[in-house]
Length: 269
Ligand SMILES: [Zn+2]
Image (cartoon, rainbow, N blue to C red; front, top):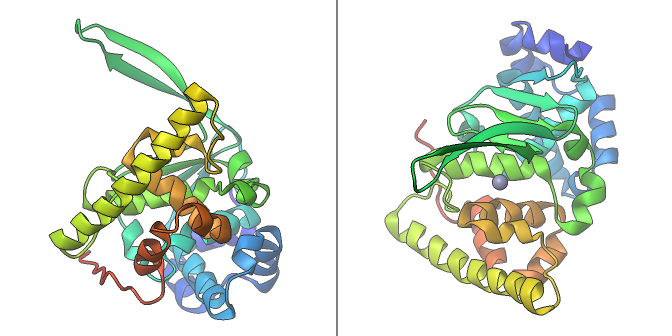
């Protein structure tokens, strides 16, 4: 089940809506009021975000799992957060999927591993979100809804999963988004790797030797792909603290996500 406006939007009137029906004023105001990290952006950014989020809603298919009703307000909130990373890039970065599955809360995913003896082991992993390469994005509404309170910790589930989607545009997520040349990729990876290793060191020192833990979630230390996704969350929702902790990444992220498109990202889809 869906909210009234979204239901109409997704019932086949996409083209008409995309051209002529922006997100209604009240819904948009409600979204900005609920998510201060959106409202604090420039007027120009906010107008652009509203248009992009409207296009996003027309193109994507939301569905609620376990009886969850995705209301108009929920869909607009998730769309606005999902569009923040591509605000100055292109919605085409999200062209490889259509579905967004929303669960009421954390979900259990069935996983399997094969050990060195070739034996399969099955286990359940608790997830709050997942982005599948070429497939849907899954989100826990409980976590997506709480993102304004979590902004001080640099946490944002929706941005996290959609940055994985951007990362996956040129193959499996590896912490490097699609960039126009090998040199640009090498420069990106060198700078990210240095920051990633410094962050890992801080996490290890805190966990093993009682050093002060980093501000950002230690989950960022699990892989270069997670480091890119988690630092991007912080870049968008807690920019001052992000800059204080990751001074070398600030100009890099500005060049990629920012209005100048300084990394000359091109879109071939
Ligand atoms: Zn992740």
